[in-house]
Length: 537
Image 1 (cartoon, helix red, strand yellow):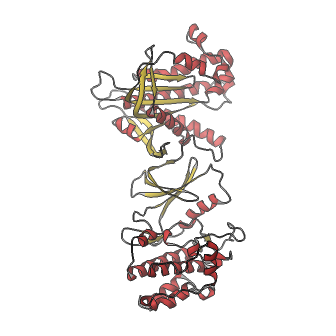
Image 2 (cartoon, helix red, strand yellow):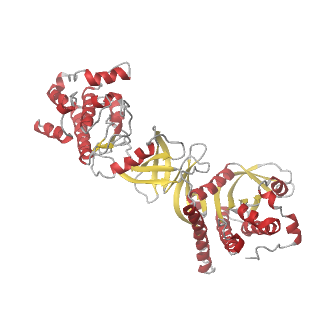
Image 3 (cartoon, helix red, strand yellow):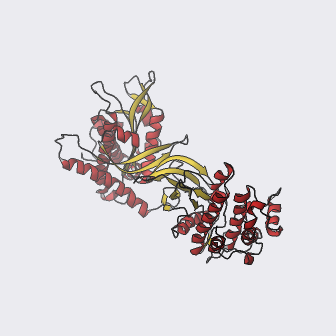
């Protein structure tokens, strides 16, 4: 490492911007990017965008003379690794660099992904040494530590040559590389690269954690953390070199981790991304509800696809929406039953809270009902499975409060699993998430006590199960009305409808499921199952 705060040449010191230029860098950018561009060509290339964070803090603390030397050293740190790997500097700012790595005439096979990722690793190594030199200065010891974040992406870039011979880069690959630098900062990685870029490096870039980042076109990009450089086959380079590079990547992110712990920013919004989940490859968006978006994803450790139920933390959530969301996991985690959806994980990732749960490729019971009539024995099987799931839920003191076909999911083997506990409540807790007169649940399946805004217990789910059972057996809902208010009145006042003659033997069961007075209903889901067993069903 060269002496940090001594100008390398008088001419370089004279060319360096004064400290005031660090707020506005347009003049420097104009100097660096001067020249008229020639024809633009769409080219497959690897783009590296790297930025040194807390650069301005050091400049402002050094004053004009010291800052000029510091700027020169940063310029070297950001440029030498790029040139060493035969990259080209497209744009250089005082604290950042955009570099292009493309095919060379002498290359038999494209290796620009290898060279780009190698350069990014060297950039981090140089930045760590620079950070150490800054930290050793007593007058700078109080400043936030310097750290570097880099994004690397192989894709289509619009490249053109300026009159001075320098390359100019724009287009999708450039934008993705910039996004990946922001992503590296958000996830506290040193280098974030697209999974395809790491694959193209043919094993040269060692991968760590994975994730998915949302792009502006609503697609998703698989990303990988770069954790080291792998020696080439037959390499004579000392293993210590590769250890030092790996240590530098770790040291760089440790700096940021300490900074976050020292000065956390609550509910900090993501830097321009609409989804960023570490540890999962997001495959596609499959739905959206009032509180959360639903994605199909693959966990880093493999296994079957999972559903991510994701809630953003930076959109001014109302009331206790986040509490409900986290509560859903806490409730489900207590239950292990074949008729209750399996939940794998609940966590926070940057600006999101999420729940990872079982994926049901066959959809929900509502979809099955829309597909056509359901045979009586199958309908009865669904009713019993739903009751069994409710029994498991009630056994741990939980009231679901939104029983309906949409919340009963189908597995490949035909089994049902109760899901969506977003409005569930433990009976041992006071109902505090609704105001006086507010209604939680779906009107077609709402119990009379819910319609009246009264306290509920497990028997409100029994009523909703009865409504669903009637619909499964007959193909129609028990009550129809022109308004929600009228529908609620019918739940409270209208008698239990009669089943058609071919299901008349189940009328007594229906009366016990849908009794207006909850004291007249089955006291539990198990009581229903016992009754059906006595009937030989």
